[in-house]
Image (cartoon, rainbow, N blue to C red):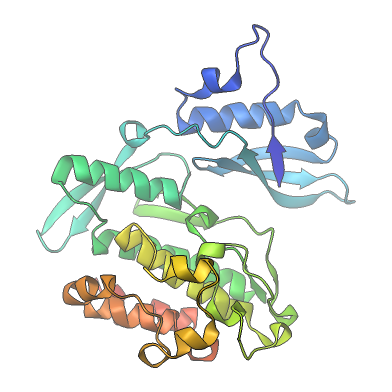
Length: 313
């Protein structure tokens, strides 16, 4: 991962003054251009193209020149100034998805280029709140996008690797002819399944088997099950724009593995939000339970996620 610090401009204007009004695409172009003139980057990599960008980073296809022949790699360029946030809704091109509830097509803003899933979800919520007064993403839209995310992660699992850092920043989205196209990125923490897992690098989605009191040895854990848990948390966040209420206590070290096992028969506690969710879609709750069981052995694999009744459109 290369962190790019913008060089001083000739007129000594601070980067934040220059970039604050730039669109996400313009910021990505600027960061990549700066990387191309950074000797720490160019001595090691030859950047070929930009394959995606989000609110805080751009992902490029590059050749690692330290190998003979050069090795094709994904290079993530992170913008250090995290305070630069711009609304992208007015820059996004519309995508039409059929809404079975109203039997009409709904116009959804999706970038012509690639954005992170987190930025995509933010732009959608902002757009739908302004145009239709909705505070959350409709299920039928999330189903289309999340299914693509599952399929892309399943492809990695089929190669014998787990990702180890699943979040909305691990996927980039672009508009395709038949709907959104998803690409999995950020493989810096991916490892072979046989190596086990001792840490999940997206702390917000770290699974219970890595908490204090867990009966599992790190070498025995299957990283694919950790990815499935993280995907379940990502699905919850996409539909609720937040995390489960007990997550904050878990991060504070106030809950351990046994605490979660003692709640609701080992199902991950999504209360009190689940009461609202269950009334809207019992299939969603069943899927979340299956993906986020506290005991990793009981979690459903991705191939079962794809055929779950929640995805019946």
